[in-house]
Image 1 (cartoon, rainbow, N blue to C red):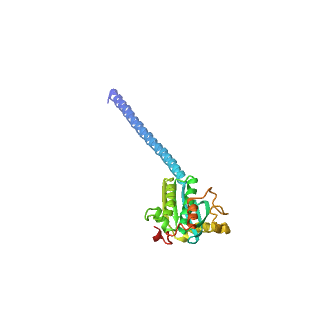
Image 2: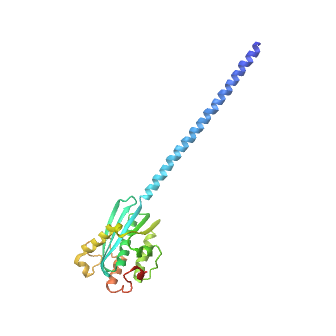
Image 3: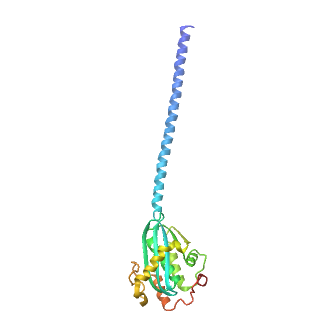
Length: 239
């Protein structure tokens, strides 16, 4: 082999070396690209977590409302109770309002209004209501028609309140699951004391802190004047 041929082979080897080096560079570039993609994925993951955090922050304004009305006699002295909690079950507010002389169905609507007003006041965006009144649940969900003129006023107020939220649901629960709201409703009647017999709706001790009489209270006063003779005691007669 001549020196020229050896030189060519060596030169060829150098060229090959350059090619290998070029391949290595390409591999390095590929690795960098992969690292870049991994970085993007990591950043995307962080962004995704940030979105989830934001969404979690929004769901923190989701409330569960337990509402119940109590009536001693039908009509009779009545009260409304409501418990507002976070979706995680943490109680944020308990409310009790004396409604005066009213029917049981009026008291149930009064309790629902009490709870919805509290959820709206706290900036709630999603509200899930749980009640043991099948009548109210079915009327508000649209399964029952509201034929009684007095209940229509309260139903309209409820529907107006529901439009304050991005999402609203209502469901029927057993009475035992609504015990705390029931306790608050009866507490309102008890704390009203003898004033309840005088028909001082919304003015007796234990009334809600909300200013002014609600529609339920005004309807209750009308009931005391005999305005609910046609309402009936059961769900079927009040639809």
